[in-house]
Image 1 (cartoon, rainbow, N blue to C red):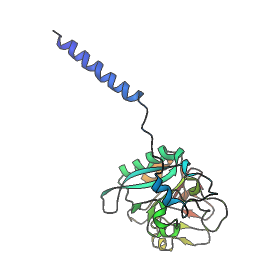
Image 2 (cartoon, rainbow, N blue to C red; image 1 turned 45 degrees about the vertical axis):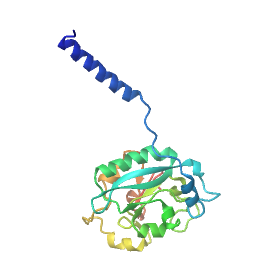
Image 3 (cartoon, one colour; image 1 turned 135 degrees about the vertical axis):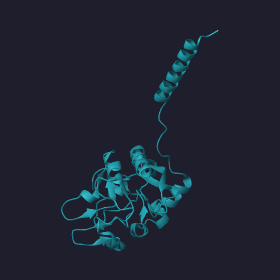
Image 4 (cartoon, helix red, strand yellow; image 1 turned 180 degrees about the horizontal axis):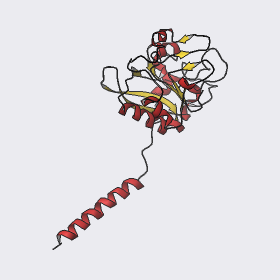
Length: 218
């Protein structure tokens, strides 16, 4: 018959084995490949031949978030597969902070129209498009290495004073206590800083892109 000490020792050994097994087990991959239906929906309005990444380079994240009513929801982000794990980590931190998001839907919901997605305050990532403002170089979004969060409440203010989307002019007071505003040092900035992404709200030179986070900082 085992003594109480022997039983306790065995229980501790089993617990240690379980901890070691969990630590040794490979982490579940973040994201998943695009489904055939998602590929079909993206081809044309969101992705096309000549884009700087292939559809195989992209991954889908199913993202839990808190909506403006404080209710839990699940959205979808499309990002570069190399960024899937870090973006999942950042978005988990945003969710843990209960930072409210209006919606989190891939840009094909808006037929690739970034202006429409911004006006709807929709959080999105991949979109094969040039840089905002009429440039010819690819945006970081075209690589799946950028995300725009609550873009209506966190607009892009150009050095010329143009506000994108136009409705974002109502949210230029960054000291306002409006839920969903991204501010220096707060939850969203901390979450993306922790994965090495930089915030457009820190830009110098006259432009501020309060919605925008990217690996490159542009």
